Length: 158
Length: 113
Image (cartoon, rainbow over all chains, first blue to last red):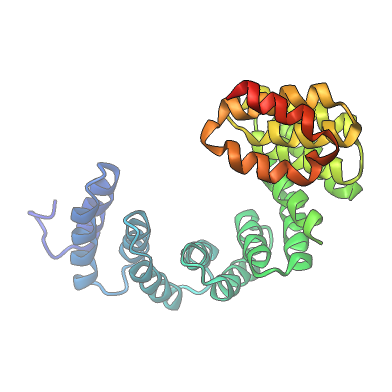
């Protein structure tokens, strides 16, 4: 398809998705970059590139992509969620809290964002806030064993 | 602490195979002096994660707190069997608690060596 229409960003994007599924991650990034060179606001390419960068452990580069993505669509909680997770991986808990808070602002029932933010509060020693977030997450999905365990650990520390 | 206990118990009902959770749950039970429940949790833990030495060390401590020196010796033997290079560290860790029962436990360690 990219040979038929090498200036079609969607074709490059789709190629990148297929390469991602085939675990040919650097080639996938190359394809997403082609899509972005044709259309710098191609959300799919930007978001997918960021996710692949996370898999490759290139967290700073991934964060840059997620940040560009949220400037294109600040209402998408999934981008904020992934941004928060990348910050968390880097131990940048304050930045992560801000990103997860945005995710929750746009999707008040976002289970993963509450868990992610609670984990950051826990790491920061703010156990009351961590507990509040774990409780909120458990109200959304109460059958998550690891979260009950994390909640118990926070209660012990309080 | 009751809320923490409830939270541990819910976690363990949902996933009874989480050995680390059983261990942390047991430590809280020890802290609130529910020793028999703690022993049960640590024994379940030891079955789940058979090569993990920590539940056995915790069992030694609980048994010593309760004055069950024979059980403590057995748990200590098992701990040393599982992690011989850590023998000295285990001995040091238990030193304070072992004091009243030191002779018996030292004998157990010597027999193991």
